Amino acid sequence: MQLYFYEDRFKNNIDHYELTEEQLHYTSHPKECIKLSNEDSDRYSILAIEDKELVTFFDLHKNEGVKPYSNNHHAILVRAFSTDFRHQGKGYAKKALILLPEFIKKNFGEVNEIVLAVNLKNIPAQELYKKCGFVDEGVRKMGEKGELIVMSYHLY
Image 1 (cartoon, rainbow, N blue to C red):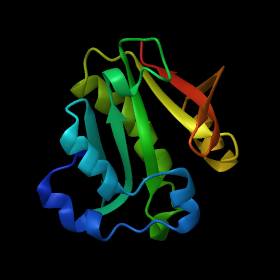
Image 2: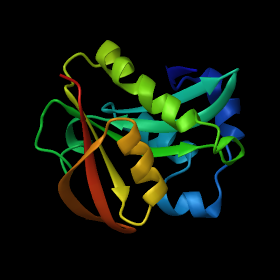
Image 3: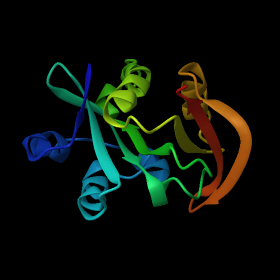
Image 4: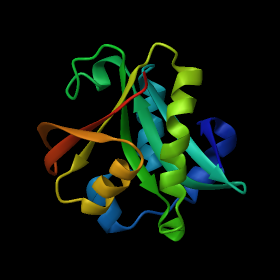
């Protein structure tokens, strides 16, 4: 698996990315994220590609995007993390999260913390993030779809 910044050459992959209604309760479709990334220079759409297939997608958001979740000016926020419905349960989300720290160190040298917010009711996602080194430090926020647990992964 490799992580890539979104480029137009991946448009077909995005067009065929499938999420269920249940998944869309907790996350946004990559098409929406890419539109937002194109409008915000601090937001980056990231694709996890396995055997030429887009299996997992998320955005990375710096500066204003991370402010509601962290006071750390050197943090980056993971948002809209999802795995294509047809590829769930195959370990791709875990693989992408394991690759993420090195990807961030390589492309965002000033970043020393990865932050994400996960819905309190989304237990499988919480467990996944914990297995991949994210820590619940007790911070809670209210989101559009309920209470969120803010989790951190410290790079240094």
